[in-house]
Amino acid sequence: MSNGYIYLHRSLIDWEWFHDHNTTRVFIYLLLRANHAPGRWKGNEIPRGSVAIGREKLAHAVGLEIQPARTAIKHLESTREITIRKGIGCSIIAINNWHRYQATNQTSNSKLTSNQPEDQQFINHKQEGRERDKEEKEKKKAVSCPAPESVAEPENAFLIFPVTGGSKTWTLTTDKLSEYKATFDTLDVEQQCKLALQWIKDNPAKRKTSKGMTSFINRWLTRAADTPARPAVTQPASSQYDRPPLISKIK
Image (cartoon, rainbow, N blue to C red; front, side, top):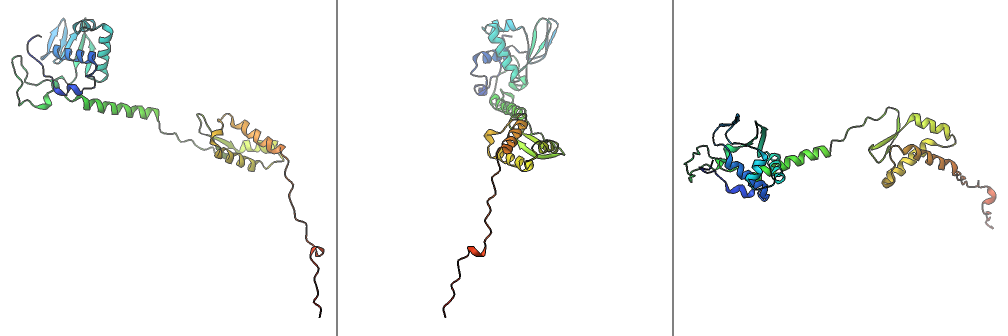
C-alpha cells in the first residue's frame, strides 16, 4: 500500500469538513488506504475503493484517540462520504464515489498529465454540501410547519369563536345556546353571545383556550343579567298648551 499515489484535487479546501482537522485527516487516510482493485483479506471481500480496518486501528493510524476518531467517522457517514458494513473481524469502509476521486487509468507507475479529465479528479464537495444542507432544511421545514388541517364545522354551530392553544376555534352550538336561553331567560342570549364574539375578536391578547370558553360565556351572561337595564328615555307628547300663543294681527 506504500507504492503509488492518489489524486487529491484542489477543491478539497472548499470541502465542508476541511477545517475539521480530525475528519480531514481520517478521510485522507482512507483515500490512501483504499484498494485500487478488488481484493480479499481474512475472508473479507474488499471492493475497489474500500478499506478493511477496525476503528481502534484507524484511530491509532491517524494519531487520534478512539472517541475523536469515531466522531470523524460519524461526520463522514452523515454527509455520505463513506459507507460502513460489518466484516469478519473488522469493518469494511467504502468510500462513496471513489472512482470519481481517482482517475480510471491509475496504475502504480502512472503519472498525472495535463490531459487528465477534470471530472475524474476530486469532486467539488462544497457544492454537494450546500445542496445537502438545502435538502435537510426543506425536510425540517416540512416537518415543523405542516399544512393546516381543515376542521369541519359542526352542523349545529351557532357561532365560531377564535381561541388560543392547540385548538384554533371553539364552537357555540345551538344545543348549548338553548341551555343558555333556558338559564338566562330574561336576556337576549343570542345578542349577548354575538357581543361576546365581537369582544374576543377586538381583544386577541385576551382570548381564552377552548376549555375556558364555557366559563367565559357563563361569566359574560351572568354580568349581563346582573346589570340593570337602562330605562328608555321617551319624549313627552307635545300638546297644544306647549306651543307659544299665537299673536293675532291687529287690524
